[in-house]
Length: 223
Image (tube, rainbow, N blue to C red; front, side, top):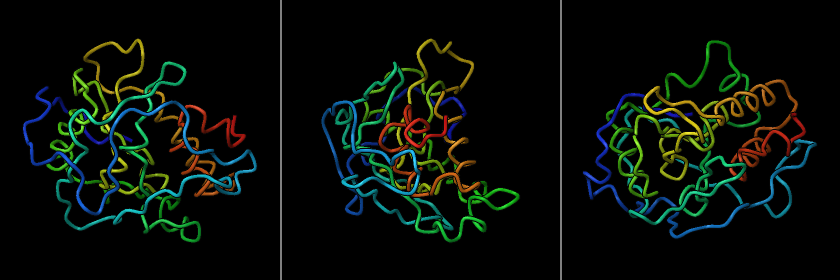
């Protein structure tokens, strides 16, 4: 889910030092077609054979630092059912090593919540969001776009790995200025419920959402 809700000045590249991946990230550039690696099947037992392995990030940190973003203009949005989807070369997703299938009860499925204490501060994500908008050549209002975790925190996504964050444009027909509102958030919530209830595995949910979030629920037989 997104992190930044406050209006941000629509200057796309105020900090040139934020462009380009750090050595620990997987760089990517250029446009990509629709689709991607196959998602898990309806059984929800895991990623399907041949699916691309999702990178693993650093996990929750006591202090977060601003992460470098892909080179300006190097990323391209895809669209499925008119909904924006990330460029897998720039945003392949990244999981947190702190969340595993074995410790779900003490992490993302624990009572009282998990995500609040691991989110990077806006002082970090605000700068990242503006730089990432440049990566994707996004020119709309930043306060109507979401700086989104491709694999949400409630699905064990890494909190601040540049490979797991992207400026998600508003849905088609979105009215300007009311703030962020998109159809990916309910998908994340339903996947979280399915993982915690044992209807699907953590790995299967993560693979489904990085492949195509618009089809994740149907791929896992959850609709």
